[in-house]
Length: 259
Image (tube, rainbow, N blue to C red; front, side):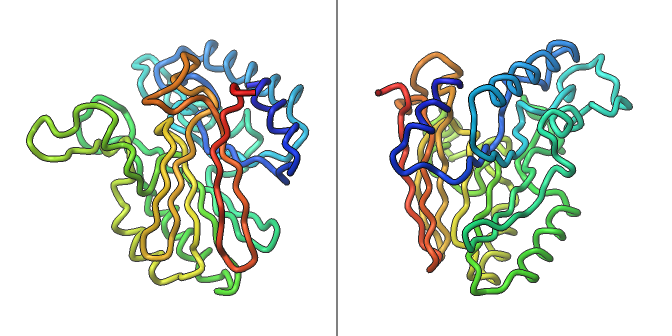
């Protein structure tokens, strides 16, 4: 992680800020509280000692504490997303900000599962957050381009290559891998043509797509294959994003291990 920050700072065209799309720690879902806190301590220490740029954080599924831990105390204020909010200094789990003529909306896409599955979470927006997002878009001038960041991809193609998802004879993408409410968000974005770019992490793969005027960019992972080299041929790295006044954008994946 420190090596990645060093590489970012050395870019000739240095970025204005970093957008962290989540999974800041290895795992908190099924991790005892003291170990989860130790991982957050490590993350924040490395961040403060090695990063000189402003960082905007999203919450990833690995950042949630206790949902997969039977003995976790659900009344603990740090349970669920409380520990991540505290460690990252976030007042809320979703928020918006303005930079360089763009409106940035950071979403919380990890929510408790509603059907039986191997994972304790599903990718989607809760009703409260969806209503907030809709209000944010209504309040944003159509002349202002919007970039939306979520940990779990709203839409991507790369997840179809992760595992044997066609074993049943049909494509079956788990709801923990991609937003199950993508159809609902599709309709919302159609009503707000200034939504131009959606950034995400989660898949540890690099994926670019465009659908009905919105670019969807899944941007790999600093850890690659969870610190064991490349994941599905995608090496550890980060994405540089260039945003323009007309709402267009360019993205470039950079492997920080390649020199």
